[in-house]
Length: 283
DNA sequence: ACACGACCCTGTTCGC
DNA sequence: TGCGAACAGGGTCGTG
Image (cartoon, rainbow, N blue to C red; front, side, top):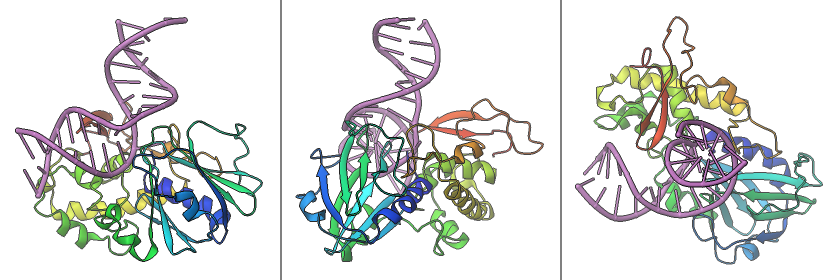
């Protein structure tokens, strides 16, 4: 579900409720998500204060006053929702407890922060804050696409000599952090590059042209509160609305929106995942 | 090095 | 209406 813009939107929604606030109690309702939850997680987290709430790629990082950092990944269907007596609480949520509410943080001001994940592809871990960046799952991840390190020189040199398709390269988290299936499709449509094209057969100048499109698509999506297709919600329960701005993703059969193109978006499957592109203007 | 499929899960939608 | 298949925004692992 959540790619970088969705995770960033969730982070921003959680900031007013979590940053600087103490976690009074933590309910851990099952032993594992995708992997086992950290040992004695409830005890290690409860009583600490959230000093900062950061994001790296699709991970949320909560730096705790204990010197540990809580890593959270939302997987495909993960949500984090605020409820209880707090500004920004998700008031549409009538049910006290859903069977997929796996972890609940009770904050000192009465807010509840609930991690809900039906498919349980999500994950959490606790590590020393000093070593958070070196965590197994974070260590190999490429630069933040909205940061200075991700630029034309970086992307062209990193992709030089690769034999993969450009879609697979953009989804490869070692190349650039945070892109997923939706935004990779959108970037390639804007850039006019076919998702099936081999990286080695794209001129360096065209590879470089992807950089501003990556930045634009992600920034616009963040500004729109992410994309809500099925289960994604912002932390306050609101829907994101970038899905209305999709030009390729999920538009199978629709006319291409590029002025004067006249092509039709088609769906193909690349290594088990849907790609959407216009065969006329994406080459 | 890389491409691909299987796998991890549940829920929803689609075709017959 | 019912039922199975296909599909879904994530990533890892093993195989060829």
